[in-house]
Image (cartoon, rainbow, N blue to C red; front, side, top):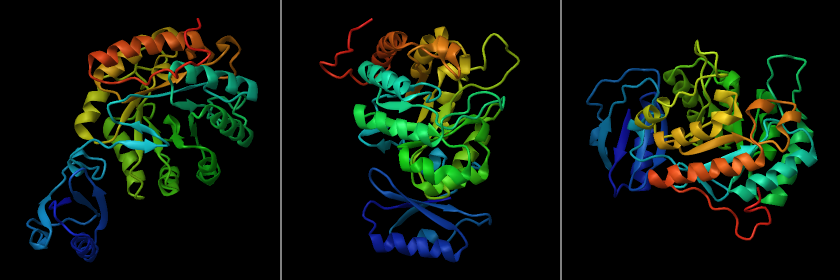
Length: 350
């Protein structure tokens, strides 16, 4: 359930409600809204209504939440959550663009692509230092060296960093370098990892599992919010279906559905879903039209030589073309795409 406080509620009145909830056996999660505070009450026990909380000073109303996910539910927060990271907002009117290679392969490779995606208007650099691979013989990342290269790219370009963590024991290390910690599709229900990234206090990009339902995905997000980390970004990256023409199936319908069910921002990954760089632009445009708050795009300076997921990676030139296509759709649906840096030496080059 959630307890909606009046606009004039004092800090003391909020603390009094939190104290009473703990007496009733609930964890209290105060959430500061635009106009007022709401308090999420989470616990395993059932409670009858009316609760008695309605009579406490500063309480406007008590609302039961019927969804199995409580803090993630749109009922727990009237407005959309906006995740602010280093001057970039994810979830507001401006779209957030995350771009870069699937894996950090070398200093030269990453710095080259970082400069190019920056020039095209990306605000966040993606790149894997730790890579989960189906085959143990595939390239699995540079690990700490990869994190150090990512940090160097951030220092030079000003781009924020999003990178994946695989192991609960490595969360502290990754958090030292990353601005946003990614939990990949294969780890969506790694509950120990979800709790650890929640405790890190860093924003978390949570990818949908390979065959996860929307409810399972939102329940995974709930694990992170339960650690009082409300900075979660959902990433639709395609699910497994019977279709074999694409690598996975991008579930466009999940995007507007999530907008109804949760207040968390949603981004789309058209590259992992399709496995084909040629489909990245139309899928990106469709995702933005459906309400996505941003995109996660794979860009590599030489896709044919990539050590990981080359067929789904765009060249920097293709990425610039994608950005122009997305810009047109964004304008049509009332969203704003980041502008290219003025007077950047790479702007306009083909």
